[in-house]
Amino acid sequence: MPFEEKINTQLSPSELSTNRRNFIAGLWHGAFLAFGMALTDPTTVISAFVTNLTGSTVWVGGFSTVLTVAGALPQLFVARWLEPKPRKLPYLLAAISLRVISWGVLAWLIFTTGTQHPITLAWIFVGMLVIFYAGGGLANIPYTDIIGKVIPLKRRGAFFGGKGALAGPLSVGAALLARQILADVPYPNNYAFLFGLAAIGLAIASLGFWAIQEPLSTAVENTMLSWHEYWHQLL
Image 1 (tube, rainbow, N blue to C red):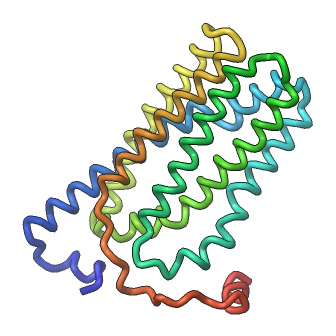
Image 2: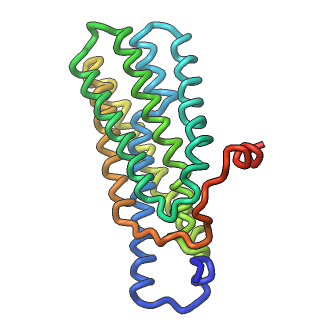
Image 3: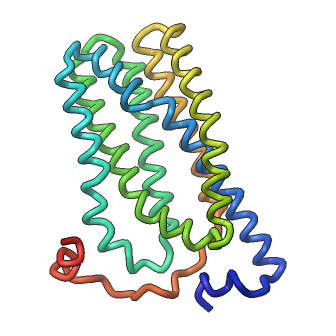
């Protein structure tokens, strides 16, 4: 029976337990994701770090463009390949892991490089940001599909409302923590500390999706669209 049809039928105790587990796991992910992302906000933390590295506002504008392209472009190509997959959770976990690793590597590089080679570090920063935001773009596709399958229709309002209620205070707390770290820890170790904490926050957030039990998709075809059909749909 398709998942959407089962929400109106009597669920067994095991199904109720799975739904509850998925609901809590989804809230866990949303809350800690907001915390980790607020520590490295692109309009404040990242922009300030780029300015400190290069002393140029041109670099800041260039980074904004890179982040936009890196987050959006990969989705155009991955969606065609990912859509027919009956389970998308492994691909989401891979994208999350990519983001955690990129932030962790960046924190280590900032700490070890210091202020000796600022332009080299800036280019490394570009590469790590491309990986991080490309991972976010790749994660957006399976995330929507998985949430649609594991959160029953009648509980989605409560889910997104609860996620927002948890994410708001955690984001504010992370922003205050970031300000304190930037003020108290010497440069550039303060940014290394922030990116390291963000990597930890994202790793903790990923535990939510490790706990989620994703059902197989029964309403999708197992055939991939041709590029001609796919681009026609996009247009």
